Length: 235
Length: 75
Length: 139
Image (cartoon, rainbow over all chains, first blue to last red; front, top):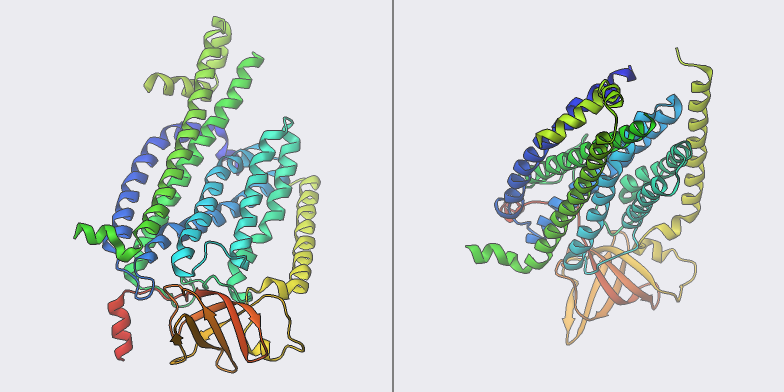
């Protein structure tokens, strides 16, 4: 089954794809920005500060999603001894980390005018900061060890440690008293966000996901060329 | 109208700084990733140029190698 | 289908995961008091002794309870079971309003009086345009 995804077979697609993904990303982002900054209404309570949500929430969602994928891919790579899983995982990490930082910074910018503070050591915010540290550890491990086998094991261990934090982030607002508000968008029950604000949020999420895909493809291609470079040395 | 749009009931500083931070991070990450990619690609081309004819042919028999070279000439 | 080593590695990962989940659960359970960002008025009422250190109290600002005199703000935080009186001097955040969430940081004078050094507005999960809010209010 994994043979289908072997670099030899997919490089033809991954090497051509970034151009198109970049184009699509710019289109969706432009629509999203106009929706978020101009068309969408102000909130009855937060007024225009609500617009910060359109970058904050998608960034947080995607950074959580990418970390979960890192864990799944690393575990698969570890269990099945498949190098490609680690390569995909490694290529996904940078955009996840950047999205995590964006979520923290924009959240802080939102907190100042609404809560009245830049930072609070509340469960949601602190657990998100811990996720950023796990991302940082993951990225650093790939740089400090030369032996690939070692990197595979340590990075898998880091993702397993970090994944415990993901449900804590998700449910921190329900389990404990936090300053951060609970989730507005629920898959199973009614969402407490008006549709005129939901659409820009979804468009921005699509744009951010495309950006992650773009960075992933470029990074993955770089990794493949790196391997081929080593192959040329051996000739 | 434009003024109202830029004023955002006094929240403009916060909203615009959040959006510009996001977009600047995007740009930064894109440029860094692009740079790494181009660097690796150039290294490949340089190494390929040093190969003997026989070695080049055997390297070309690998699909990915052929693709990389094709992409470089296309750009 | 897969070799014995593959199965063993899978079991290994699963055991690590279970161990970590249990450990984290136990740690969080024992740290519960420190994880919460604020306490509710009911929790303050049931304190066995009044702590002199800085704490946070959170809940709703009771309707018609805000009174502003010279540079002091007085209001009542309620969780609809118990209430606590808060005094505070200084600027309050924009979203601070009656019937909305609030977190006050400061010191307890006794079980009914709290002197705040900082006021944070707690936002709820409802997002809607003003017109929609008005329409809802009319119902």
